[in-house]
Image 1 (tube, rainbow, N blue to C red):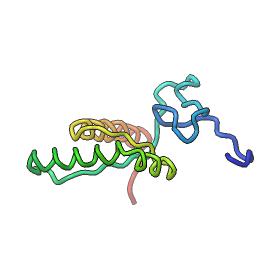
Image 2 (image 1 turned 135 degrees about the vertical axis):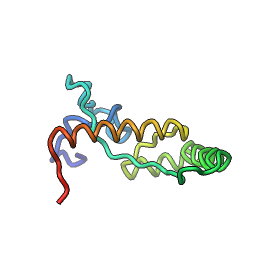
Image 3 (image 1 turned 180 degrees about the horizontal axis):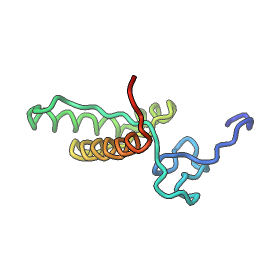
Image 4 (image 1 turned 60 degrees about the vertical axis):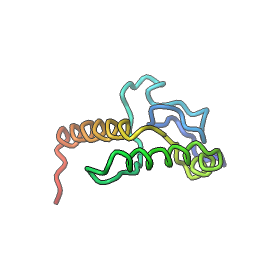
Length: 111
């Protein structure tokens, strides 16, 4: 991209990415609902005490709010998506459901 040998025509994330602000999303270009991006999340074991989850979440939010942390992650191509533990749980469930439907529809099988 930087050397103008390749031109990005769109990103598959829900929003434009910080490192390529001029590249529109696929949805912005008219293909609604097209999203497919890598994501990571930090998790704790099921049944972890609520105070442990809250403290872990607070520490993570503090780290992600730090401008140096954000800049370093973005330099690595990572767009931080801070949120609560409940939001992460909802997001992960929605992703499993979405990609589960895709896998079923196209008939993906493990060998």
